[in-house]
Length: 376
Ligand SMILES: Nc1ncnc2c1ncn2[C@@H]1O[C@H](COP(=O)(O)OP(=O)(O)OP(=O)(O)O)[C@@H](O)[C@H]1O
Image (tube, rainbow, N blue to C red; front, top):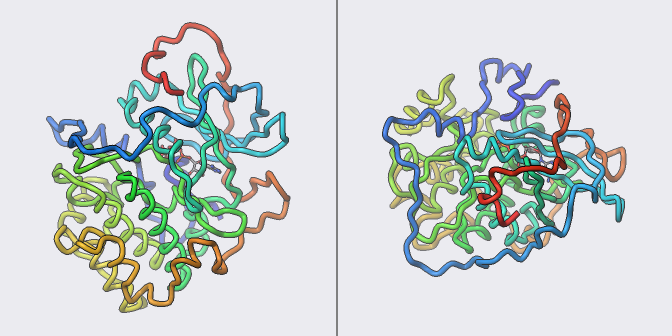
């Protein structure tokens, strides 16, 4: 079955999704926002929990350390390649971002934040970055290669997940978000495309392109339309609670195969989000409906995750009754699906194919954007 994803824009042939359009990401939103919308971030003078200087060494790697192989995925600013280290023979994924595109789409701050966030995080359910480097045209991020493909592809192939399967993935996502929030990092782009599965079937969240350290509130308009919280759309200051809204959308999508506010155009989706009326399919378990309603609520004084007990209100919800959180964190719980990685290490058969293009990697020469990416 052909499976569409955010970046490829190919069309799925699943019945449910015959009308489904790809979920354009933030950058789409940035260029289709209300007039006079101001893009800026606001930070209180709080104490940052993040190292102010990078600990992931820059300049540790360069292009000649790797054999560049096929494309695993494409994004707004470049593509992600499977690569092989010529030193240790191991496979990695390298995300390549075109400097010119980043500048044109005004994403310099987000790109530097992505590197800054990724260098810090170390968690079983988050992607690990090993280092970065750059040439005159591109930025490169070296990450672990996660062989099992996107949760998105698995969901489209399955049409929808049974209750326990959705619960398993949601629970691992919660642990990852809890960890990020403990560092005051908001993730802001939760969706099945950004959740990869490792060879055993555990999740790894990738794409920190919108992750941001926010000590109190921020105003930046970003996210993916179907997953965006209403406070972002109405240009209100917002905080970590936007990730808990997106978690509710993710749970709904995993259980049904579609997002609750899906529409043909982003503007219509935003209208539905602001109305916040969800039609639950009859096969949803009553506890899942209760949890989704408590996450996908406009009322921030009632949204779970945002109350005085924080994440514990979510972890203690009836839908997660049988989850033993410590075991889950230790990966001591059997995964519902083991990706069929038959070709051994470096097998990338679970990723869709993307047209390859001639690389402009490694070109030395004048770099008009040098001053913007000094950390890479
Ligand atoms: N570490 C990894 N291992 C395997 N595949 C990966 C890895 N990182 C990313 N990918 C693949 O590449 C795709 C694009 O990656 P990513 O979302 O980080 O790029 P992006 O340029 O930020 O895309 P977008 O503009 O859609 O956000 C992912 O959806 C995934 O399929």
